[in-house]
Length: 257
Image 1: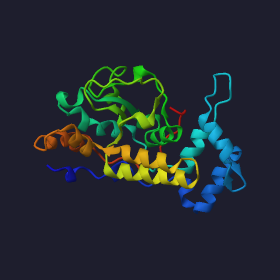
Image 2: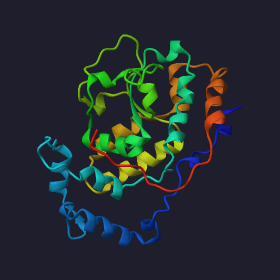
Image 3: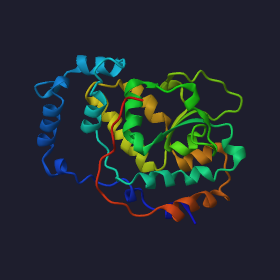
Image 4: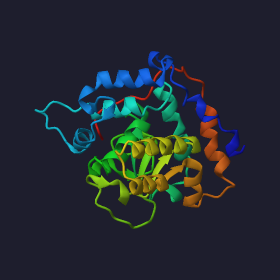
């Protein structure tokens, strides 16, 4: 069984058929401007306000910002509504021999908590806004201790043995990888990062740096030194659990991570 025999990523990442997609791009942009008027001057983004909202961290007494919802709507990813499928993608990583993954320090990003949209927001903010308790070895374990259980997307702080990092509100530029299941996911995120550069929400150098950190499961296993002779065993997880899912929703949007 080869890596090419894995179910195509379109089993999960499908064109979103909600009502908005039946209208022209101009109508879609108008709908977003009407829904989030505070972020626009006419047809253009209000860059000063948008950038300020990206940096702001509202207290519990303050009105929550709509910045994430606006970004998700403007730069949306087409994905399936079935969250259970995405959890099954991590089977590949569950099968990594312990000696290769024990020293990998990671933070998991669930599809139910934003998935690719959360990764995009992390890139925009430049920070992984979670406590040090949300990081751990890429190993199976209790949900409150194992980042592996919170995939299928991961921020990889380090793959080197003995490396210590301050992981309280970590800078994304200090992280080693942004780990996603498929090469197509790398392309999807890269395209959205380019769109953010075009809209002047992300600097070109930061965009290049984040793109360089994107890596899919197969290349990640190669980097860890997993022998090609056992990689078909890792891929078995995709074959056993992957299944067609409804083509309904774009990815969710919750608070900035």
